[in-house]
Length: 461
Image 1 (tube, helix red, strand yellow):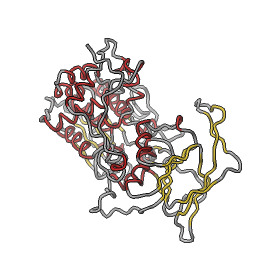
Image 2 (spheres, rainbow, N blue to C red):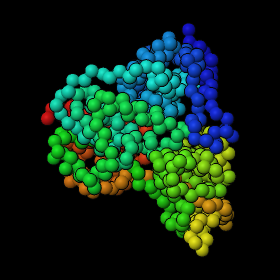
Image 3 (cartoon, rainbow, N blue to C red):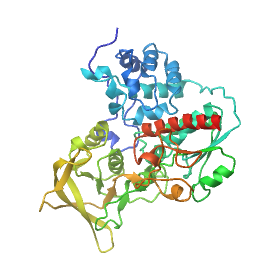
Image 4 (cartoon, rainbow, N blue to C red):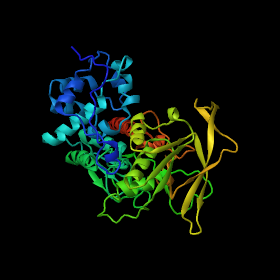
């Protein structure tokens, strides 16, 4: 019989006033007993609605049933049949709107903690089991993957299992993409990402770093090197700005730059001499997960006041509810229904304040969301010495402008069909390069689809 408790087994966490001063992981994870107790809440539904909410098709009830029996190694192997990055997904996937959002237990209480269980299983395996490498029969074909983020790594892993010789070309000096430069250590420890990547290398995936495709090599040159197909998973790293007065002031960052300096360049560690401005009051403009990450990082770097400025209300914020909840606990101050109008600087060009106007929600726009409208005469000032713009990102145009025959839409996103095939023969794409900024798991789903399509294409070539 399933445990019919209406609430999840609580996940242990660091105390808010302790964790907002360090970069250690916020959530501490389940013990074996906690994991088995939570697994016993699963009804093991025959039609598996949770699986339909998973972009990489993890067989959720099957792995949870193994957890309930205490077979944690078997549970990991079950997840790994379809997911290349279980320790990552268990931490950063928006489960509440995907697998857990479809869970039957969520109708009359809280859903089963699928993400928490996936995280536990992956961590248990890493700590207690020797990684097994699947037996792979090489098929003699070479495939290139551009970008070592979640989409590229997933595509590479799936192709490697099918016997392809896969080379991943990564622009940065470290593989991982947004997993290493964007998501903070307190949400996703970098050693976790490194271990997941080690698993791919053990399957024969080669990763070449410092390879800026479009500069060092073009896609066409890669094809001329004997690669029979190419997958572009280069992400969306080009930040957006508002175009308001003062955005060029000293102390204005894009969230991408701010988080890259902290996460990849380790500005939070004293032994690293990474340039980053030490601030007292910070305004973070935006309401998504990246804005929450930037705000929480700024707090940990010692800022006394961190304001999140968002032009809609809390219900409309695209950030995960868990991230907003954690931010509030960590004393982040929310200025909702507000929008910046200009940034003020001193005679040396350094930020001193940000001017905002109050907003109200009007009629729904084309997307169905109520349109924010300015309230005349409601302008006010916030004294800050830094502003972080977290307004979204778009794909860097470098690859598409240096590749013959590849087309993009007006937003700069590559055009693909349902099989992730671009307008250029033998070239596929997925993740943020196609959708614009989205979630890790959706990027992984695209990489998975592309791998299957590339396999089909090369078998029929």
